[in-house]
Length: 295
Ligand SMILES: [Zn+2]
Image (cartoon, rainbow, N blue to C red; front, side):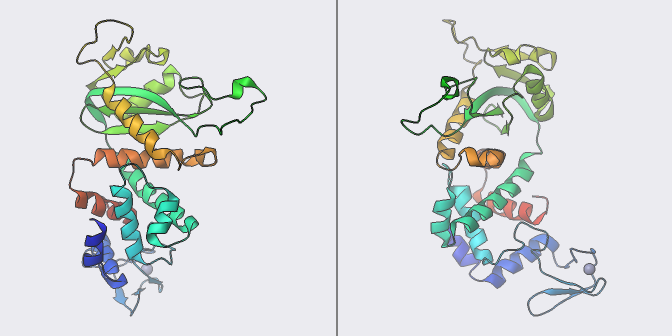
């Protein structure tokens, strides 16, 4: 769904509610508090005869507790899905004409829905794995009391590490981790969690953390300093994903949002994993995930 289609298909709050109700309940509204279907419509909400409460379709979903029209939610989902390079809260606040905090909260809720989907798929086939470091560049001229505090590129920096794995021309999965969680056993546990070790072959670089990976699954190592580079043994796909993630996260992610890094990572994984599918499927998929309906 692009924004024009949203204006056409969901012109009013009622149209949006009708869609959410159909997606969540089908034809039979169900009380979200006691699961009873003994309910009736009231002019604006539903009434449950079993537990004597009133409820709306958004109770217990990402759309709950918001005074923002649902159409703006739908627009936010569309804008985020189509923003291949990421969308800042500031830009979203301009697009939706809401304040920046509201825009930020909505975007985070939508990322939460995206996260739920990201957690359900084991990678198979040829799987490339790598790590990267995310973090804002220091301000120009910033003085460091301890020269060791100065950020350096690559491993051993103070930036936030992310571990990732991708199926060749398939799906990606990635996890933001603490700086001390980059050892071999952490990397192996990531692989056991996210890769079907019986049906995959792993490719990595020579980082020592990958040394014992062949105890978990078949493992090829790229030797960057050798003159011969095998056509098949490379990590170009995961490096491409890192490039996209880093470009997209600039301007959105900074130290204050370190604890939210995983949400941003999930957003980029989600978009990457649906890059070949029907855009409507992604849009309605997020709505379903946001409602707690299996997407
Ligand atoms: Zn009830």
